[in-house]
Image 1 (cartoon, one colour):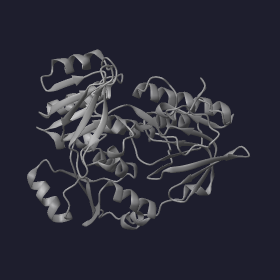
Image 2 (cartoon, rainbow, N blue to C red):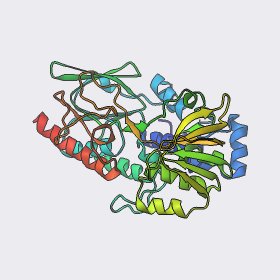
Image 3 (spheres, rainbow, N blue to C red):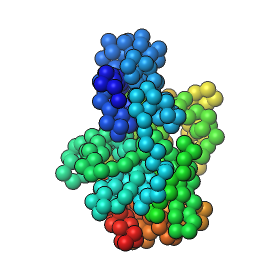
Length: 395
């Protein structure tokens, strides 16, 4: 790599794709200069240099590469190596004892425990951090009070690199095939990786309501990430669907932005933590509709309104909206697993107390599995368990 390499990143603190881009650069041991475009001067500078208004914007040696998706596209094509002046090793040319899929808490802790056992392992992940990197404040991870998600993930990342870790970041697993005691992982870069064992720690993603206009209006008023898009509705009217912790936190975040918030929950009561329920109840910015579902989303080019229906009375109500945030839980990211792998209706991989799936040599950990509690500390512990069981399996 050239000594004169200069990497510049225009970003904002709340932007999850900025966090992913910075984590990706760090995963390649690349230093960068960061400019926060909350500074109006830097925002104008970014527009002049890149011709774009969205973040992140990554510039290497004066060449504008674009945003996070552009960065990953360059990585997959091999063009990023040319820009950086490096040559990456092809890790698909050997057989690994263990491949770990996913770089969230479960995957990274599995890496740590497997590395400490001396297992020859490869980490493969589309990005770093999973859901955690998008979390603004974490106060329930022991010893890390009031830390934000990207700082916690970077602490994890730095920790595992106390060991000799091999990682491929930017590739996505499309299919796993198991045969003759080996497991072949095919990626979106048209590569095949082979391992004696696999820990699937690919996490989960936001569930959808399943309505046609939800998909039509995605990004045009309908959203799934409050930290990504909540700022768009400061001082406006927005609804949040979901009465668990994520829904309550989304409503409170919008209220902090001086938005007029409608919180919709199909159950007869809010299901989140008591401290969050109390904050919602005390907010004069949040109107709560329990026993209520979204019957219809209205709008063609942009969101206009929703029709709410009370499940007990059948009464319908139209509410004009600027934004709609869907916070109704998660769906496991497991579409790539073998067809014979046992999963439940949420696509969660069914495991036993040893983190084993019904296919020998394939293990699962964290939110992609059917563990009941979806918490950072629990996912991390499940990753450790899985690695310890893999060590026994390989022995």
